[in-house]
Amino acid sequence: MRIILIAAFVIAAMSLDARPVKAYETPWCAMISLGLGNVYWDCRYNSLEECVPNVIAGNRGFCNPNPLWEGPYAAARPRYGKRRVRAR
Image (cartoon, rainbow, N blue to C red):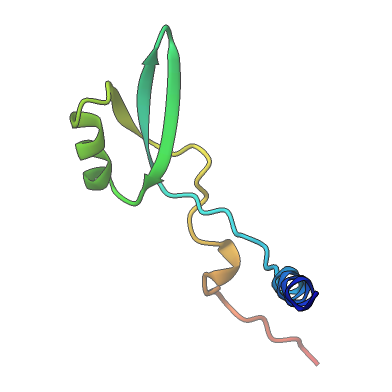
C-alpha cells in the first residue's frame, strides 16, 4: 500500500510542475525527397553550412530557407527614433 501512495505522490508532483514546451523554429530546412513527389521538411538547422552535410549524406534533397521562421521577436529589438516633446 505504501508503494501505491508513494507512486501517486510522485505522479502528482510531476504533473503539477508541467511547463509548456516552446516551439523552436530555425532559419534553414533540409527538404528530403521520400519518392513519388513526397517531401519531408527537416527544419532544425541554424545555418546553411549545418544543413548541407545532411543533404549530401545521401538524403536526396536540398536546403531551403524556412518559410515559417520569423526571426527574433520584434519586441526584443530596441526602438530608436525621435522623441517628441509636448509643447506647453
